[in-house]
Figure (cartoon, rainbow, N blue to C red):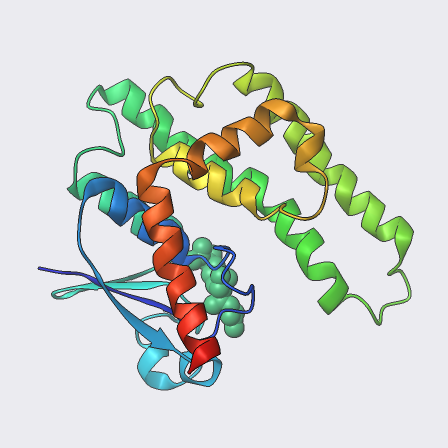
Length: 217
Ligand SMILES: N[C@@H](CCC(=O)N[C@@H](CS)C(=O)NCC(=O)O)C(=O)O
């Protein structure tokens, strides 16, 4: 059964592969699972029909027969469990790869998202300004220092590429254009390594094609 995912009809990032359907697309491409995409507008995402799939009115969602999922982490985990190629067979290595997925989403992503959103959600607050932004930048650096130390000169977080790396690379890509990732050559190289995977490129091109079509349409 071909799963259907949802994605932005008009991606606010201009097709740079930041919208979180990119994580799901990449996972599906890694395991060689074809998929359909249903594009949704911002207003459709908040309608009851979409909220039945995603209680928070967001993308991505994933439908496969009777199963409907939301949360990019849960969706990628589901794909990784149902197909070979994203989680190791060895039980302990598998548990560690899953740990890295959680680390990406629970430990590394939150300070990045807080920094990303500050200019939109905090700009009218009295505390907002250079100091606040540099405080948020330093919170990101604290995590990147630790991650960089752990990765060292390895290619991937726990020997072979896994769903943990997929998620971590996607989270680190959110730093694009902020100038912070570049302070960590091994993390920059790690992200570039992820981006050079053929499955990443196919997913990126598919997401970009939606943006280009919307631009020309
Ligand atoms: N934790 C969720 C976050 C989902 C999320 O923030 N989706 C964004 C797009 S990347 C969205 O739909 N934003 C529009 C909105 O929240 O109205 C996940 O990982 O799937």
